[in-house]
Length: 362
Image 1 (tube, helix red, strand yellow):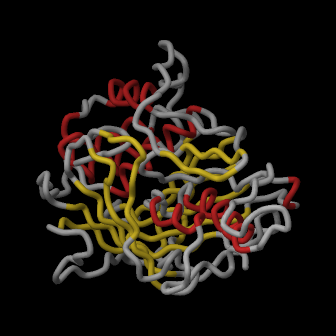
Image 2 (image 1 turned 120 degrees about the vertical axis):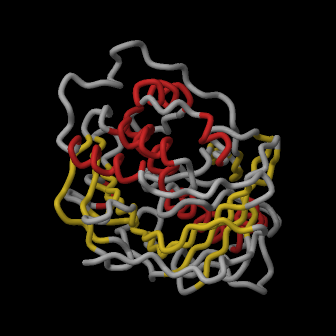
């Protein structure tokens, strides 16, 4: 078995599959791809009896290059593969803020400034229903991710549905939501998988509730300073890319006050290296304008896609730009998604009544 054949409901679960059940899965296509790939490889090893160890013991994971992080992840993840695989989520340990002039405000506006200004203005005019502490933000996506071998060529899996229910309880809590995937190449298809931390977390950067988002400064400079101070950069990522990805997480996976959303888009204008592309297509086949950033350190490029007329967020695309081990020398798509529904519900597992999938003109 490999990542082409994820475990199916009803089968006996290994220790590694138990990790899947307790891991954070709000990753569309996000770091999901990086950690899912490692987890599925670990399940392969876990299901293969070792001549030197009991069948229940997890064998060490070799050091291999994982797929780098595309945009979108809630919350942040720390993974250790040393002797045995384990995953932990932590709301602490944020890096300190960069010194003044450390790159949060480039001397020249990036080439996407005009478009981001329009997107910010459109966000300011959008209605947002405040979300109560006991409710959930529901997001439904169509998504495709890499199902190729751990260190082999990228191969996109089948398009399938992902639903995420993000709890609004301010905390401290260990369970911050639930995820369910359905369709071919889904992870644990049909099962509601809890999104959990090993230590309790409060509302904040790793547990972004509506109330916390409403408390953020709306001035783009102050907002960007806060995000740089509270965002961790993973191995291989630049700090600029980590913040770009974090903003993408918040904008695609939450419901927030219009002023907060507008402030975030204006903050993106100040991140070095952000550009635009005239046409990009999401996982549902909808065409839009792209806001993109290529990161030389991690050799990745992420694209956010917006409706050309309404500037509504449609989805994202993630590329590897270079990977000598995999023979990649040009942009190679390894994750794509489309946000179809975003709503407020009262219980996890509940789907919003009467919600129509998001549509746009091609």
